[in-house]
Image (cartoon, rainbow, N blue to C red; front, side, top):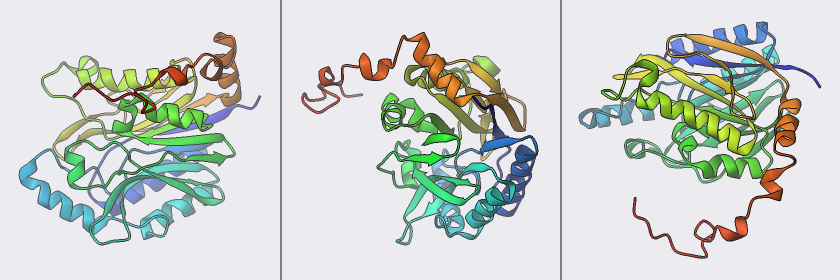
Length: 298
């Protein structure tokens, strides 16, 4: 079975679109030179993650997001990155604020491009309270056929919910790709012991493990918009093991050589067969399938 080099980027966020574009192009070239077939960037990597935690500045954040939003796949910066993917014969996942068809309607979107051009996009489904001031939520979980395998996309908070990764897995996804803007939680532990770091890493590992799928995550690193982003752009194997991670401090691309098909087959062997189909009892999850009402408020 063939080996595949995967790259993920711990991205130093800025609000300068031209600078961000140059960084993307440089990291794509670096990843391709390392033999990578895929490189992943964080959510909103093209324009930077809006500074939305300070509600006194929310109007300014919304105005900036509207001014720099681009359509998908025809926006000028979006097209530059699609062209770079084709030029370097590599798959690229990057994030942006997408302009909807109507003025003022914005989405938090990941774009997947490859050697043949634009492949598809995903709009963030689960929005935090502050994010709802800027973006509209997406409403579906597409899976894309690529030369690497079937790819499902998620954005940051989406991975906090097991249903998203499970929906993608049951729809055929073999690689779960997550672009994030995940910051430290001030006052809740230092460095790797920060509660936000522990939660981020745990979600990555558990989502890979419980679905027996590869997971590739990318995050901002360092100070950006008043928050301290934690990095930890990483590749997780089908048993929840960390193959490579950028950790807290590394800026830029990290790579790993993996065997995608062998990893999927190995997880199936460990669990003595395709347990997600054989052992799941979806018929008993009556609250989830709507047969019984939700009774918790939280």
